[in-house]
Amino acid sequence: MATIYQERKIRDPSLNPGDEPYFAAAGEGKLMLKKCKDCGKVHHYPRAICPFCFSQNLEWQQAKGTGEIYTFSVTRRGTPTPYAIGYVALDEGPKLMTNIVNCDLDALKCGTKVKVCFIKSENGTSVPMFTPA
Amino acid sequence: MSIKGKAYIVGAFEHPLRKAPNHSLSQLHAEIAKGTLEDAGLTKNDIDGFFCAGDAPGGNVWSLANYMNFDKLKHVDSTDMGGCSYLVHVAHAAEAIAAGKCNVALVTLAGRPNSEGSSGTQVRDRGAGVPDSPFELPYSPVTVNLYAMCAMRHMHQYGTTSEQLAWVKVAASHHAQHNPHAMLRDVVTVEQVLASPMISDPLHRLDCCVVSDGGGGVIVARPEIAKQLKRPLVKITGTGESTKGQMGGDVDLTYSGAAWTGPRAFEMAGIKPSDIKYASIYDSFTITVIMQIEDLGFCKKGEGGKFVSDGNLISGVGKFPFNTDGGGLCNNHPANRGGMTKIIEAVRQLRGEAHPKVQVKNCDIALAHGTGGALGARHGSATLIMERE
Image (cartoon, rainbow over all chains, first blue to last red; front, side, top):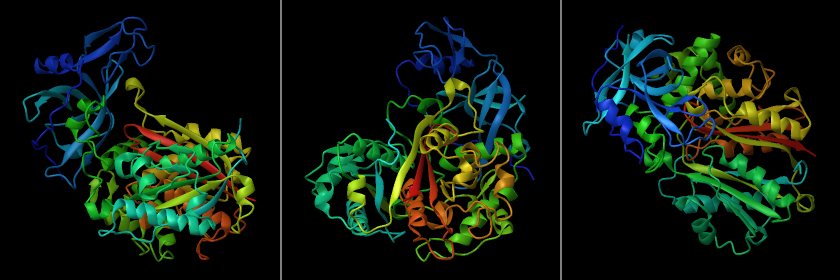
């Protein structure tokens, strides 16, 4: 049995002030993380304040775009096409919610090595997703 | 200041309807208020504290207090913690009573998701300004897959199986067969759960709770008032509340906020998990029960699957009777918020008013635990310990 990934409509992210650089970078094929220049920790989703030490001395850092699946689920009912949602643990540490795409969804496992790719939402915004490496 | 013993649950009422297309939301709340007052032996004029959550029309107390014309309120609270709001409300009501702010506090929950066609496979947009939405909603997180991701990780990390998850539903169905109001009254087997359609791996349709209209209410009162009423005395002895999220990216879906709220509630009550005779455990999905049973300390982390197997959750059969009304999995999950019905069945057990087929003998200490939001993203968590006096 195989459940081959099918394209589906991706909801547009409704940005809040400060989110633009993340999605602008995604448009250039880059996955960005926020790094705290005081405590050195990297976090996700990106915030205006470090969630670990509350410093506002933050900078964007490009992630390598590789990691492994921490957990996932293939949603099969109540959706026009099956899709895989998951959390990917990036090599830099943070885990982010994402979709796993361009593969046989039935072959996914916790621990599968993945790399970032970018899929356009309905209005053309690039959204980071992952595919088996 | 501990609120242990400073307040009692004197009224509890579950609306009998599971589909109420011709009831307004306010009517449901009002019928619940009336039913809860009648259960307690109190009247509308006794109410001086009122609690409701995001399920209320408008999302706070104003419209409902006005609809029911509560004109003696000295304490109000619209805290919204999703499905566990009502356990939080009971704790806050006990605190308000202990602080002398009110004497008789009513908590109501109602909703019509069954009539409105709500489903656990719909993306819930929580509106503008929610900071996590741009980084999540494009991926279509829905209630069922947010819990399914917890189940998948639990299986990977601890070897939990679909059969073990199914046992939670089987136990709930054994209880629901005795509840004439339950939505699903047929006893099901592990095989039937596994044969039901896969909704979101690894959760089958029968791993999911029902979607129901209706609701329920409780009344919390100070000891002097509780002792004048003719109902069995149910004393609040321990509470805990918290929220758990994604930790800035250090996401850990193997445990819930119950790991924090449980120990606090047990410490306040001065008891340990093995003292609990009956437990209402939030059961939005079968995995929810397994994780919370572990987090509350009824078994070791990772051993919840084994713990729930072979009928251990069935009253009269196993050692850990849970959700004897049939729970959210079979009986009722009004407004997509299961916390209120968790309190109500615990009160029934402590009063000796559960169905005779599921009544736990000598049930003098009970626990109710709730979750709100989604374990796979952000959630509220609340624990309540009650003792019969």
